[in-house]
Length: 330
Length: 251
Image 1: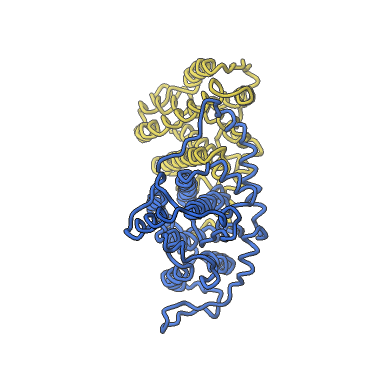
Image 2 (image 1 turned 45 degrees about the horizontal axis):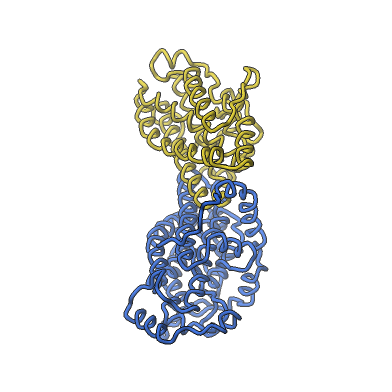
């Protein structure tokens, strides 16, 4: 999946404030980006570029790992062979994406181990949507259809960014995600055209997921502090609002044509501006959840901690004194 | 052809239940690569179960695979208790995977010469997949024994000690052994067990793992006759949680 909105660290970070990049190298770097060149792991790059890219790719990787949990718990309960086999393959893909993304982030100098430690300590974030519970089978179809769809909008944009290893990982990820979207849509349709109980279950799931979906692309750009430089460096490729608008353009009709309603009476497209208008999705809730106080934050991290701690002996057994950490070339 | 039906049902149920257990590792493995491996093997196993149930449907007029898998009571299952055990720690899962997949490998090797053609052709296909399952098991067994540390060796040894009596239950004789053997359908559980046992003895010894001697009465039998662990009932309840709310609709 999953990407999600851009959540960059604030520029007031101490170590960053004191760092001054070589102005000549910075100019050359920016010229390369303007010329559409990709930046590769051993090229010179500004301190903040490296730092924000690590943050971005790491958050994306964590989102894949944590995102596997709400759907993963439904693998054993999936109704029938077809749904079960597809769901295992889908969640397996997400874990594979995490593997690709951690490798891409490692090329910037942070080890997978360090990234996972930061995930477990709560220092680094992941996509907010996975802090909500997947209560019923219908939630799995909403995630597979709409969260994956939202992630594709985000990832297709990021795939055109400036950092080579991340772009290459995203290209492959996007191919796989387009299958995920198809399976999600197929399972969503099965419920939408099914029995009354199935439709009710789907409507209930969409009602609960709609706000997290609106939150998915992050706060409105008006509220975003330092997007401009990151846009120029092609780290951030599209504004949160533009991506959300593109998503609504593509998927609102697909939901409505199935007779499912969207739980926002104010949702409508303003034809003169081309922008979707919607009720205030309560950005304070978004902030609360991302800072650890959502319905499932503790549970998600507890599962991850359990996986890390109960299996530590396996990784320890593989460690060899003679082995050295090497940075992969992606 | 009750004999073939019974044989296929046993194999399919084993595959479905071990596939279910393998799939429980998705998201919580010791490293991402293992999540991916176990998910991959789970897909293969569940796919094998579906294909085997499909033979029962097409050749023996039984219900469709979804019906056979998701609408029976635990007592109607023919799986061995070995596959029903919960996943335990990674050593437990790995040793079960190793013991099970080497048996599968020999089983489908024999069946690729079966006189029952639908099974022969499936077995030929499955063999190619199971090759990767045993390869995976062997690499990890070696990594956690010969190339591991004291703790990992101890964990593997203790999983072998605990699991072997259950593993031998895989070869519980069916009611139609002589019919299967006489008609060239399958070599029979006894021959399979002997082949498997000599292989794993040599292989485990090469990993410096001792193979406990299991007495006749210690083997965990009964699964093939419908006597299961309570864990199977729990597993089936979980597996059917969604579908049993309405068996008549499409999901």
